[in-house]
Amino acid sequence: MMERPIPQQRAFVMLQGPPGPLAFRLAKAMRSCGVAVHRINICAGDRIDWPEPATDFRDRFSDWATFFDTYLGDQGITDILLFGDCRPYHVTARRVAELRGIRTHVLEEGYLRPHWMTLEREGVNAHSRLQRNKDWFFEKAKRVAEEPELPPITASFRRRVRDATRHYAAVTLGRIAYPHYRSHRPGWALFAALGWIRKYLVGARHERQAERTIRQVTSKPFFLLPLQLSDDYQIRAHSPFPDMPGAAAYVLESFASHAPADAQLLVKAHPLDCSFFNWSAFLKRRGARLGIAGRVHFIDGGDLDQLAAEAAGMVCVNSTSATLALQAGTPVCALGDAIYRFAGMTFDGHIDQFWFDPTPPDAGLYEAFRRVLVDQCLVRGGLASESAVTTLVDNLAERLCARGPRITASQARR
Image (cartoon, rainbow, N blue to C red):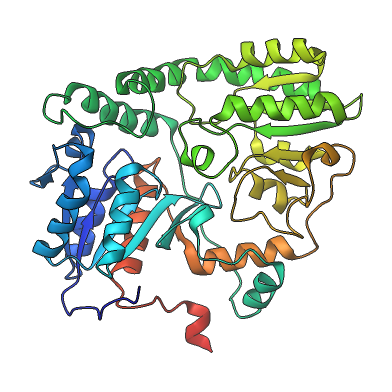
């Protein structure tokens, strides 16, 4: 559907964002640029992250489409901003907005980590409007300026623990105020808060265990399997698997039947996995059943950049961890839909062949891919420190408050 002309006064509505102060601080920055910003709270976690009056949606999910459409019209909304495009509330919001010709801006964890966040129109990852064609990326990269040298974005796991615990505890305690809300994450929200606390308390011990395992495994040829979060919609909506254990079982079956006898498989926990799922026990059981118990190793820690560079290959579903391997020239086999999954970049065959014939990305392709991403759909900043949030707010406000399509530095020079 064609977009309607942009009114003189733009008006945003913000929906659910990442736990923490980002959305509220961004709204203040955008208002200082003369842009109206509204907010709809869908749960008590949203409300505690937004310390000023806002509209509360407390009805059943079946009423959400009608409510949201009426709200868009009454408030004269021109743009919506949301975090993640596959949450049920956000899927409905995007489609309702499309019917009115309203623009959607999707914020997500960065395609390139740890110093970037992703901001794209209409959708991200498998819904991105970027083409999956190596010739397209090579051609686009010719007209894009080189990536500038920028200071690193700092991060603190304690900050993520604080923001997430506060948010999910509020979701649980505020169930009376929002009686019909159901999180996109399976399970009770309080368990998520407790999981974040537990992960923080045992983090140092797990890191020491990981270092010992890495020293043992990396002395032999090894493949790397970076885990993703089972409640991540990249698994649930953009892969053949219902959850991450299902994906891991699939990889183990293939590894047991087709990998070289001396190859090792190193499975690395997601750094933000706060669940109580016992990955170590799961992998031991599966490995013993398949006769590969001594060749499958699990770590909750370690330097992913270094491991990705040293591995014989990486197998993933659609994790952004793959970009670290591709940057190092390490072969990648991607099992789900991903922005980087196309011929010339990732292995173009079945996983069963990958173990014996891992092929690296085409020369120069990842560099072209990265240059286009930075230019078109990445924003500098992060969520895990005060300076990271400040940087992200400044860059997001500049991007979102611009009228019409963003003019990049490379376009301005042409």
